[in-house]
Image (cartoon, rainbow, N blue to C red; front, side):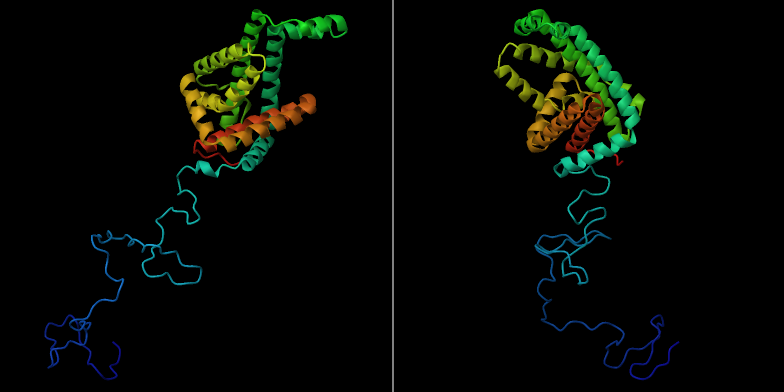
Length: 325
């Protein structure tokens, strides 16, 4: 017990026999405000407001800002709720904002992911590329005629000037279907990499929704077949269609959507993110072109990076996280 140095004598607050002073004022109780006094401005809650729940912070005053480092919080300011990022990012556990997609970041991730699983990517690209070349050789008669007559200028000129027949157009559409399935296998590996950071060789052949891929391939082949009858406009329209369907194969495989739904989803996604998708497509084309200049070795690197780039951008545009590398 501390020593009393004077003034008000100590009193045990639990002593029922303690007596008040003669004037009735208890020195241990807080003084009451004088009659007629008003609370300071701003201390009363606005009309119609409810008191905060137990343990919750009161709502901040309108227009209040968080305090700067080293300063006291202003009156009416409350800290943000748990999990909130004061720098504008998503709360913990929430999907990232699609508006934060950075194509440069996607390219860096694609390069790093390819580097960590280069063996699987090169092996899968070699196998699928060999199948694509074989299908192109078998389903493109004009290609066989061109290669056969390389040493005969007259025959080669005749092949070039021969109009494309309906049979050749149908075979070309079938080749387009084969290429769609082969590309879907590469996309399957890239989507696996977005979930794990890397891809194994078996991931490329774990294709889901094969029926949806085939139907989608038939639709795109039919579009190519119809547009092939338009000399110049058909090529332009083919580029436009391919651009707006850039994400369709990802929706077919990743979300297991049917072909029509995937096409609609792709058109909506691309329409809402025209700039990002355009930059991604142009970068993929440039990467593939540079790889083609280096022939087979360059394509073994360029094709995987282009597919990984597209998978990363797709995953981010739909608001889903990408596994770090």
